[in-house]
Length: 205
Image (cartoon, rainbow, N blue to C red; front, side):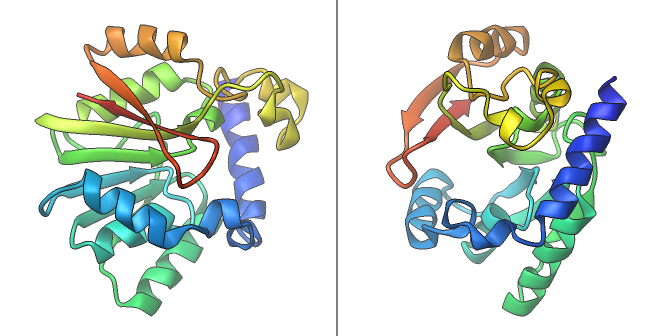
């Protein structure tokens, strides 16, 4: 079933890649995000942007001087990201890959960051374990996610059979997230972001 879920998720985002950047919620607030990220990431770092999509975070982080690798399951999304990076003259390594099975060695990155990805994953616990694995000992995992809602947001994008296989499809349940973080030996703090009304920043160490 997991493979079917991932196939459906990939197909959906390949299709959505054509119009994804038309939504202000996906591509807007760039100046505010640049400020948030510059305050969060000090000094030059090697950063993995998981589920990078069309490159929103990757582009800003590269502009800020970081060494950035972006990974996404959708070729459609990555083709958009690569074009935008090329147009801006930014050197970003974009890779097709699975957020739950990263093709990197242990301790490869100073930071792993993601924005609105956990709700699309059938195994968020496995993903967080993988993300933790590729972070250096003093590194951080930064999750930018949506607060839990009563409605199942996943059903707006996928059919009900797929949506019910996504544990965080209606946003982040912080109690469930705490259980996962404990299993991965992570401590975390939660900050509310003012740049988008639905966003939380979860900083894990």
